[in-house]
Length: 250
Image (cartoon, rainbow, N blue to C red; front, side, top):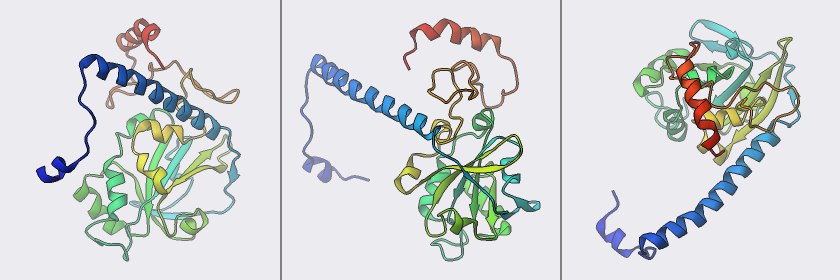
């Protein structure tokens, strides 16, 4: 905890009137909106990145045995696969995974929202399924699919020495493509539904997004549900959205 002495030595900002504070906040809000627009533009550029075909077969170990990279999609169109360091040479083994990777896992939001956008999130490590099965309930990560790397996947996709999110797409012929890659400080922002979707080729799939021609889109907000209510019609919520859309500012 920060001590009173440390706080006392801080060079603090000026204390101003309510009117001055409001003016300063309005000025900062302009910058924040610029940041939001820039983030949206970055996501739009990601959706136009070229794709890399995955030609090699990769095998993982899952709770039920051997599975392929295609299996990790769980039938969905997109896969965000995070390489987490839970290996025998990592600090904390076998009771804990890497401290940084664990912090990231603690940030992961409810996966039902990603699934509603045809997107799967999964983790992969070198640790055995036996150890992973012990780790997940201990740390509260039961809902994260977590696989064991058995071949050169981590080296081939730049995550053998450091963590990272690889994004994959499954086309109409079940052919797989690598579409994006986030690592280093980019990983610290991951965990929310929006940052995961913004890293995918299809994005959030809402009607306001700048996406290439033919990409799937639905009306903004209307697809949202409580995490236990996806797949159910909610006419009341959709009417709330219809009445509020004119006042909402993207």
